[in-house]
Length: 122
Image (cartoon, rainbow, N blue to C red; front, top):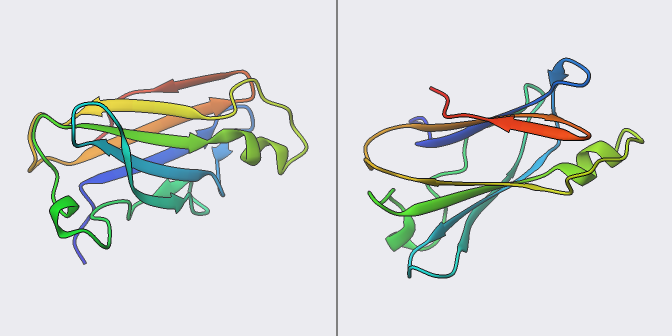
């Protein structure tokens, strides 16, 4: 199996560990206005979700499209609640544009109950 062109990694900086069990949604903006869900996943014990793309189902959504907007949504509130912690951000949405359909896009997310940071990974 080849590596998914869109992957993510969530680290809980407040405890210095990977964030296992974070729900992840991948969406895209195909029509220029509304985002549509392509795939869902959950971070593994290493905080990674490595199989978000290609989605199963619609053949027209089975390849990245240059110039298209994609969005990764991380469901952070349930993750923090599972360990008895409150959080300020119930989810984190990261919108990015795919400049080249043949590249890999890795979305790292560092979270704590009251902050988050992201960047383009490799």
